[in-house]
Length: 322
Image 1 (cartoon, rainbow, N blue to C red):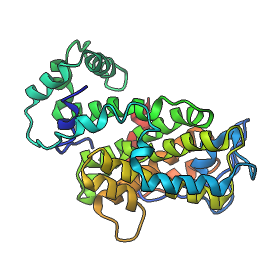
Image 2 (cartoon, one colour; image 1 turned 60 degrees about the vertical axis):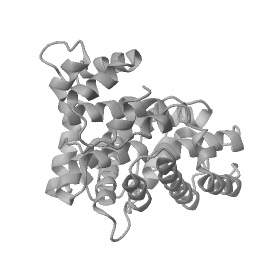
Image 3 (cartoon, rainbow, N blue to C red; image 1 turned 180 degrees about the horizontal axis):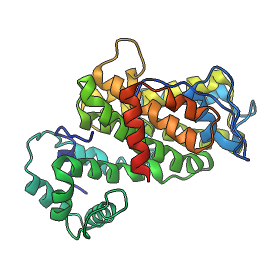
Image 4 (spheres, rainbow, N blue to C red; image 1 turned 120 degrees about the horizontal axis):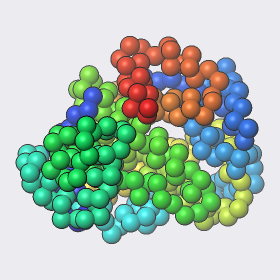
C-alpha cells in the first residue's frame, strides 16, 4: 500500500440528498420513539452512544476542551487513529496525476499483495455480483472501470482507519460509523453530478467525515474512563461540531484535496460549495437509512417525503444493500 494510494486520489470518478431531520433516544430493546421535531444528527449520536449514554457523570467541559486542543494540533489527533501516521500521509503525497492509465493503476496496486487480496475479496462480494470469479487486479479493473476501482481502493484504505478501534466507546461505535461512512460516500458521489461537484471528491469526503468522530470517541475513552457518555443536546452538538473540525483538519494533514476538508467543515451551511452540498445530502440520506434499519419510528415516512432525486439515491442505497 505504499506508492499507489496517493495516485488513487488524483482523478475524478463516477458512480452515480437534502435534509431529513430526526432525533431519538435509543433503548436496548430497539424501541424508538422520536419527538415531533426530529434531528438526524442527535438521533445518530444517541444511536451510536447506545446504552452508554445518559445525562451527566462524564466531564463534559474537559472533553470539549481536549477536543478543541486536538483541533489545534491535528498531528496529535491523527495519532488516535490506527495506522494513519505510518500509511496514509505517505501514500497521498504523490496525489497529483489525474490521467493515470488504468494499466498503470493496476500495476501500482499489484505491488502490494495484501491490498490485492482485499480488492479481489471485495470485487467478488455480493455487492458487485460478478458474472464469474475475479482473480486479479486486471479483472477487477475490467469489471469496475478505472474510477470504480479508485473508489474500491479508497474504501479498502479507509476501512481500518474507522472500522478497527480500541477503547470502550470507540470500539462500540466503529462498526456503525464505518457502515454510515460507506453509505454516505456512495450517496454523496451520486448526488455530486447534479450539484456540479466532483463525484470522487464527494466519495472521499464521505469516507473521511467520521474520522474526527472516531478521534473524539478515542479521546473520551481516555478522559472519561468508564463514565457514561453525556447525552444532553448541547454536549452532543458541541461534540459533533468539534468532530467535523477534526475531520477537516486531519484531511488537510493527510494531503487530501483541499476541497474535501472544506466540504466537511462547511457541509450544511448556507451558501456551501457544491461539494459541501453533496456531502451534506449524502450524510443525511445515509443517517436516515441507518436509523431506519435501527427501527426509528417515522423513518419510513421521512424517506417517503424525500424530493425525487434524493429518493432515487436513497432507493439506490437500499438496493446496493441487498
